[in-house]
Image (cartoon, rainbow, N blue to C red; front, side, top):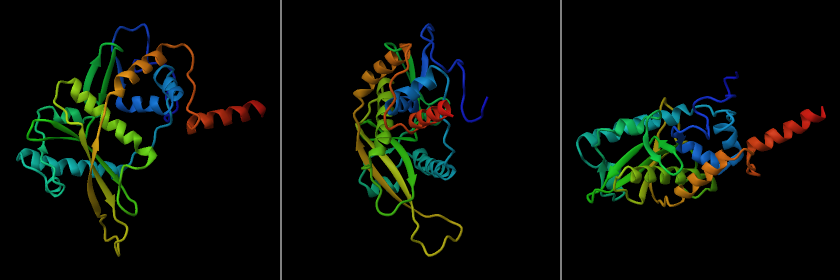
Length: 252
């Protein structure tokens, strides 16, 4: 078996005859929305896309941000960035915060209609004086100019936020539709590296709407229960590659 992709069914792949809840991560929901065929190959037939290589610098930024906000969480006080942006909230203290951040555990909800156990790992949660929770996601990049959420490919960021909001809502938390992206932009206009990378940090608010999640879970259920491969997204790079290579192999 290649270390770059898995082949063959195991307990993580869908079995329509099983009565056990099927675990469905936030990222796999996004995969379905990006390309139903790639999703079906992955979750039902056991053929996964080659994984991307880890972004170690992004992970380091995430870890340091969590440590920084945890200092203020322990004191039940607002972070200076929140004050700068006029956000009336503090980091949320809860005994399950570490579970929610853990990619193997995360926050979970068993949807009885689809029998999916949907889960995802959040970066942070803030709470306002009304007791509403704001879901927070950390992002890091390095680009010229101000960061934003205006690019078409950033729809994945927005869906990610909305699935987290839906998960907390389903776990009976009072969730604000306003989420926040703490966006770190690595500066390249310094005169020298000097062994450190400096970031400009912005907080971007986003008004989420998770009404679509219920319908998409129904679509995923139908997709997995079908014995036929679904159509691919015409713009899916993986499907285009498979199609082109198959044609060449058959004609060689």
